[in-house]
Length: 235
Image (cartoon, rainbow, N blue to C red; front, side):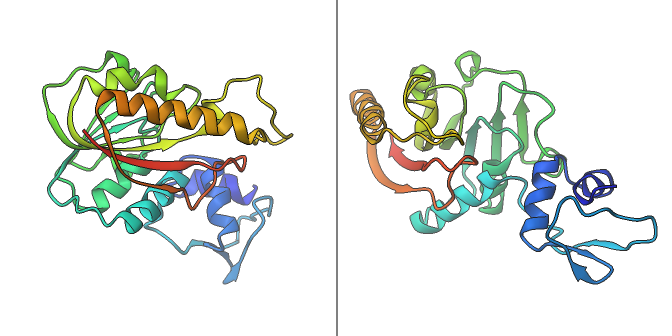
């Protein structure tokens, strides 16, 4: 059996992509030797070890972690809303920063990693578009990481919720439209198009009365290599 498949079948790992990340990050040992190839064939008598049991559930975890390290935002005892929670990458970092509660909202289902789902500070809404989500809770912090939809399509729905601050991961690859030039990997090459959608986004937030407090390019690119950027606003 391939090593990446072996990990998903025998360890608490939900996807082959995550297994591949761990392997390529030198986090997997077989017979006391570090392996770096997901295609390595594991035999029945091989001893496989995972060197990082408390791993982050997705790349999104690292993205938000690095941003919050720069921002130095105190989230202790805060109530959070995570929009586009997916496997729980952002949620994991919020929990790590000692929030008291996280509401997770995602259009998908059965994506939230069980180590996140089993945390008693979590409440999750699956198969739920944020435009259909209703809540009377006042959120101290909102995080937003969505794909395959423009932020501008959901920002009014987000604004209708009660919250103090929001962190948005801006992904130009989902903002510029399908007609903009990309390379073979899907990386947007039209710098002017990227700047325009970013300007439109910031203008929209300004009209909503949001105040931009900090922004920074994500230290990790998107999977295809697109440069993404974090924006931190107060409402």
